[in-house]
Amino acid sequence: MLKERIITALILLPIALCGFFLLEGAGFALFIGLVVTLGAWEWARLAGFESQSFRTGYAAIIAVLLFLLHLLPELAPWVLGASVLWWLTATYLVLTYPGTSEKWSSAACKLLIGLLILLPAWQGLVLIKQWQLGNWLIMAVMVLVWGADIGAYFSGKAFGKRKLAPQVSPGKSWEGLYGGLILSLVITTVVAVHRDWSAANLLQGLFGAAVVVLASVVGDLTESMFKRRSGIKDSSNLLPGHGGVLDRIDSLTAAIPVFAVLLWAANWGAM
Image (cartoon, rainbow, N blue to C red; front, side, top):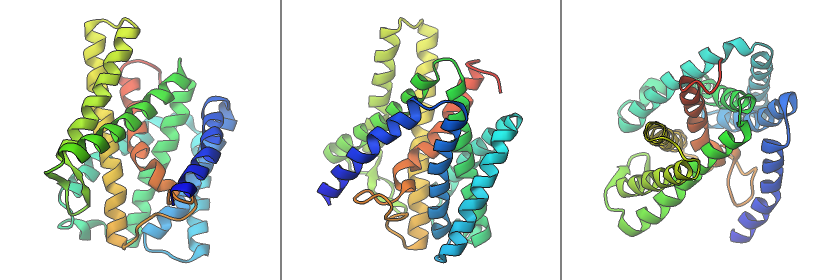
């Protein structure tokens, strides 16, 4: 298993880095669209559909919708606004699981939720890419999420006692959440000092980092909730040793659109 994980990571990492930072415009949108379309194929399984034809059809629908969003960039505010509302709702559903699971248990509802998770993740990345320092901003959100994951892992191992969401993901603890949040804030502070931010910008950055990290946790827990409801361990076996695409990007599907909205609110760009 470890050997498979290492080999897969060594193959995928350079592909991902080249796709994120070397591609521009339509090429970048297509690259991210491919990842999201694969995620859609996996999501159909979480929605309860094992048929390959149906899963492929759902992925094709997502691909068409992504193409339409590419042609109609003026829809970006609506897509990202819907995403913020969804992740607020998802927070409530995670905290109240399994009591509220019947509210979203129908296949149609799950497929609709897939749209609210996948489309804004693509839209957020495409939008950020167009802004000043786009590549660095993409790296920033990824470092925040990865830093939070690393901090949560080690602090959870060392101090984890109180379960964060035992019905959804028994391995996660409040101590892990605090550790991940603290490390992300430390990273933000280091960047602020290096770039000589003002005190006001530092406070704004720390607030934004905290919101993004908390959103990433909700993204992770949301996929875990749907997998638990469906009785599935991994979203697929597309990535040997790592599970599926959704298993790798679940945190980012929430963090990216929230990050984009925060940047927009801070006048980094205009939608």
